[in-house]
Length: 152
Image 1 (cartoon, rainbow, N blue to C red):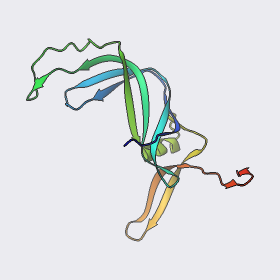
Image 2 (cartoon, rainbow, N blue to C red):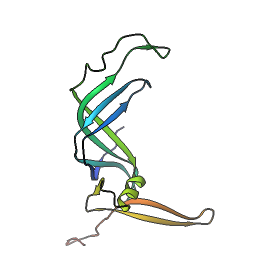
Image 3 (cartoon, helix red, strand yellow):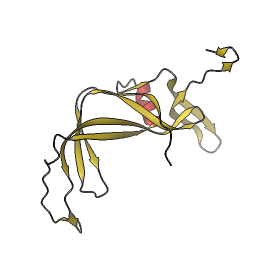
Image 4 (tube, rainbow, N blue to C red):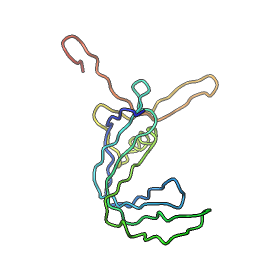
């Protein structure tokens, strides 16, 4: 079952950066060089008006090296050319907790930018058992609708 994704903002990568993708077998990896740019940031879950779970960013790039050698009991049993896919298209998907993105935005981090209908804020909850709990959240501002249109 797939979840519907929706864009909440942008991730800004100020300079080219190499990311490492890790796969099912711990020794396998792929390094992808992602160019500097502005990449859409998506979420898939809402808890009321708050973004819940992960924010993710999908970035295309170029493979710089990889390693997918055959292993037996953790020991390599084949020769593998780590450069055979060099220069081919690759991608990297970055995941971040929504509260972590909110904290970065509230700290004036230049890496994240929200769409106008989303706001990062500090949420304070009072509980009898735990006292005051403070969390960082991202909220979608919902406009009230009337018969004449949308109120501001």
